[in-house]
Length: 607
Image (cartoon, one colour):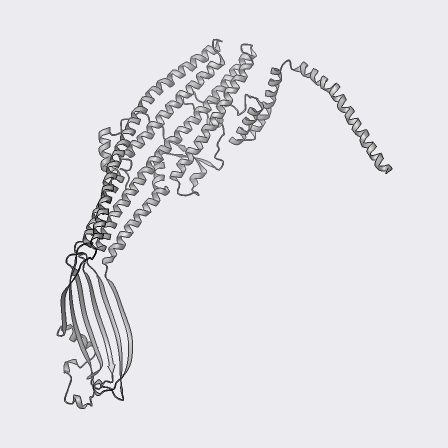
C-alpha cells in the first residue's frame, strides 16, 4: 500500500513538471519565435516566397529521381493542395520556333502507358495493312465467308452418288407335313449367302435413281431342287422422275441456289466489314496524329511560360517588374501542365483505340510499343470525286446494297419453292432388271419329277450365272405413274402471303438504304468543304497570332506590355494552331469517310 501511494506521488510530480514546461514554452518560446519571424519576414508575402523556394528545391530533387507521369502529377497535386506555385515543378522544355515541337531530350516524360517499352513509327499504309491482316472483326467476317463456301460445297455434295453393300448368311430348317414341300424326314434344310451392292443418288432434274447388284448362293436338301448349290444374280435399275411438283425446283436445288447466294452475301458482308474497319482505322490514325500534335502544342506552351518566367526574373533583378508577376506566370504554367496531362491521357486513349483495330490479340507486340504516326496531316487536295459521281459510285459499289439485292433473289427462290409445294405430285417411275441363274445338278429320286431334267444352260458355276444375267434373256420392265396432291392448300397461301410481306420489307430496306447512302455521301462532302474553309481561315489565324505574339514580346521587353498580355498572346497562338490542326485532322478524317461512303476505300484491295 505504501509503495502504491509512492508511485502515484511520483506520477503527480512528473505531470507537474510537464505542466510547468508547457507554461514556460507558451510564455517564453513562442514570443521569441514570433520576434524572429517578424525580424526575418516582414510580411506574409515574404513567408510565401520562402516556402516557394523551399518547395522548389525539394521538387527538383524528386523530379530527377522520377521520369514517370504519375510522379510529376503527384507533385503538382501537392503544390495545388498547399497553395504553392513553383517555377520548376516539371522542369524546363526547349522547342523549335515554328513547328511547336520541343527537342526530344527536353520533352516532358508524362506517358501514362506504363507498360510501353519502345516507340514504333508507323505509316498510314502499314496501319491499313495491319488492319486487313490482323483486325479481329475482319478475321471473323472472312471466316464466315469461308463457312458459306463450305456450306455450298456440302449441299452440292447431295448430287454425289452413294455407294453401299450388305452381306448376310441365312440357315433355315423348315418343318413340313406334306409331300409336295419336298422335304425328307419331315423338314427342309436351306442355307443362303447373299452379297448385295447398290449405287443411288439424285439428279439435277429432281429424279432419284438406284442401281442394285444382288448375288445369292443357295443350298438346300429339297427333293424338288434340280441344282444345289444354286447361284443367282440380278441387275436392277430404277428411276423416278417428277413431272409436275419438284420438276423445276426441289429441296436440294432450292438449298443449292440459296447457299450459292449466301456466298455472295457473306462476301459482301466481308467487304462491308473491311470497308468499315479501314475507315475506322484511318480515322483513328488521324485522331492519333492530332492528339500528338495537341501534346506538342501544350508542351510548347509550357516552354513559352518558362521562357516568360525567366524574362520576369531578369526584370525583377533590375527592378523593372514586381515579384508577384512570377507567381502569376507560375499559376499559368501550372494550368498548362494540367492541360498537358489531360491531352496525354487523350493521346493514350486514341493510341489504344488504334491498337485495338490493328492488333490480332492481346499478346501482340503492338501493345508494348508507342505508335508514332509517320504521315503528315494532308492539307487541301482535289483528289476526290465530285458529289454527283460519288453518289453514283456509292449506289454501284456499296456492298450492303448489293447484299440486300441478293437477299431479294433468295426471296424469289423461296416463293418459287412455296408455289412448287402447292402443285400435285405426278411422278414417272421406270424399272428394269436382268436375272441370271446357274448351279450344280443333283440326283433326283422322286416319283413326282421322274423324267424331268434341268435345262443344260443353267448348269454351271457363279460365272455362268453372270453370263446368263448379262445376256438380257431374262429381264423385267416396269413403268408407271404416281399421283398425289396436298390436302390443305391454304397453308401454301399463307406461306405465299408471308413471302410477299418479306419481299415488301426488303424493298423498303433498299429504299431506306439508298437514302442513307446518299445522305452519308452528302454529309461527308459538305464536311470536307467546311474543313477546307476552316483550314484557310486557320492558316490566317495562326499567322496573325504569331505576329501578335512577337509584337507583344517586343512591347514587353521595352516595358510597354504586361505578363498577362504576353501569356494571353501565347495561349491565343496555341489555340489558333490547335484549331488549325483540328481542322486538318477533320479534313483527313472526312476524306476517309467520303471514300467509304462512295464505296471506294477498298477498290484497290484484292479480295
